[in-house]
Image (cartoon, rainbow, N blue to C red; front, side, top):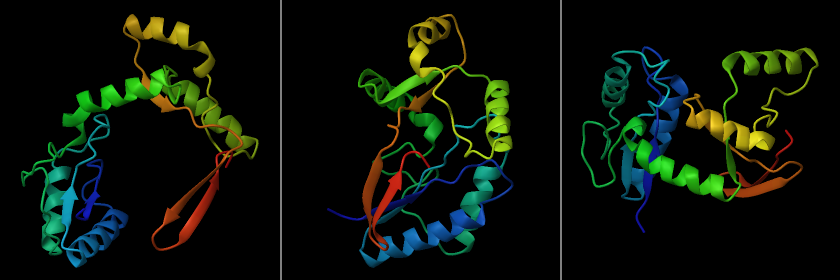
Length: 179
């Protein structure tokens, strides 16, 4: 198996975030060290916050730092397309599969409700997090979606569960889902 690394910068600012540039450099070096591919896939699914011309600036910045990518929006490859918004049909298939497995669910909460929830949790010195309000209302939620309600798909993260994974640099990392 060959090494493939990627970055997925979001075109929601004037240019690339410094953290994305750092990640790009690490991924680029790792890919080159292992004679692999370095890929850019633009994370442009937040169309409301998308800044005109930002994608072009991001790609220009990568090139100006000598980070030549092997595949990207302007460098075709076999795993395209390289804009997340152009992959939505594929994501819908997997989102539906996750919903069928009860690993995800539909949510129709408004920005106003989410803002009030976050403000309340912050005021009460709680970690701001979604309260799974729509999870127990899926029949009602799906009817509203069928009538045209705006929605998102949320992961159904289990509560009170430790999740452990191995990081190549830091070793085993355990995160509790309640944090």
